[in-house]
Image (tube, rainbow, N blue to C red; front, side, top):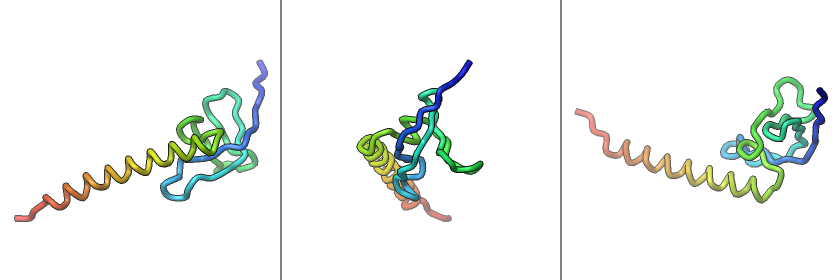
Length: 87
């Protein structure tokens, strides 16, 4: 059984909150997961539609939703710390 690999320009959002959105050449064979082309053993591996996207617009939308979720989480954490008292 042969699997055909498809290469495409992808936008990696896995590290978007720390490194920004990265544009890389990615390869997929099953349309679920993608790997970075010519990356060696430490390259990117992630799920399409969560860790990487085929369009820049979709990557921006996802990264923005992750940013808002992180801000909300941090606000809750700050509120919890502000209520904290030591006896």
